[in-house]
Image (cartoon, rainbow, N blue to C red; front, side, top):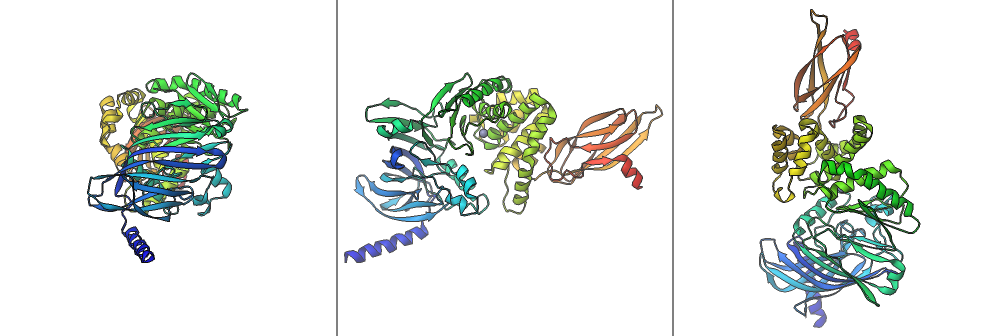
Length: 570
Ligand SMILES: [Zn+2]
């Protein structure tokens, strides 16, 4: 009889798993005690979760997901055991490509907007694992440098949702081989959890921390309260995310030495003091440029070294996890500009927060070596952007820049957008707009446009419509015709007509080359439209070039018009 009941319960839960709404609940409060044992690569967690039913209908079942290398030990409600079934759940939201999912069957329904509190316990190991990447064909070496999270004997670094589910989450399965499924799932989770409160106390066995070093979590000023209370037996770090906002909670345990600069604090590993000093110096050098564009950074930037020299860097706000390699001063300054931009300017919108930081890098290159150097920096991002635009062209649904979670768009495309905005309104107005921008006022996409328009006193709706509110792809300019006329004075009046074969409009530079000098003017050409411009030159035109690289285009092979060659064809 007992066996039979157990069986029918399993069947019931299996049925529940099929009908389960994994995204019904918002995890509004986490209160977790985390014990890390680096020597064993182990993690043990006990604590409380408060969940709110945001699905709009009553829910009886709750899904709790943790990394597949961790195991559920206990789940109780008000001290009483609740029935739950655990199962592996394939999802690339975790580095192992799978989750340990507990499907909890509550004693009674949680009504819409109702809350439920659960006490939970789970444990296991977190070794390095790049299964989600290698199984889709990423070479093992590359995969290891990307998914570097692990609890290790000498070094530990664990990032949260989207990397390692070291705290419970619940999302529908995400699949790396299906377009942007992982990025979208993580974004959906983060948006839902933005107001959640997370209190985490992390302790590590003192014996091991002697060997492995200090624990750091990503403490944003005002969000996270870090208290070290060193005892003989254990060290506890309190990490409070109140609320989480867009932060992905992470912690690092490393045997760091630290170097405090005026602009950056660098935590480096043994033997890397010289590179750390180089970085701190680079940040110092870049600081005046960032301060000139934005406000004074509200905090120093923080760098934590990753021991794997080939590891992909990871940015968490103004904190950067990166290998410290001798990459040269110029490259370090570029990284520092990006980090400092984040420390000085915040926006909850990725295309603004990241776009501005990347734009600052391009503008810094321009300041160092001239406009062409800035344009070359952007050009190095164009191929990837083109690929992304091409792959999106066939997809249903729109990826507006203001809402996108696709990196190539909110980083590379947004960088171009900010560059074009500067060309459109001028540097003074754009600086004014960045100063006037208030992240807490940015409640609708149009806010940013209004701030810039207010500073520049020009209408930018057409530009935002084509680039920010909708994804109209990229423009494609060509010189449609050129009409030179010699005036009685002997000078040449040259009318140039530019056609935009793409759907996104832009203001594009048009350069006319003639013997004895060039002349350049800017021309606004809307999507699927033509516009003309007139030059007055002392000698006949030789060549017309549309676009200097400041507008990202889908095809740049048709941008030069050789007047002599075209005349010869006639
Ligand atoms: Zn960034």
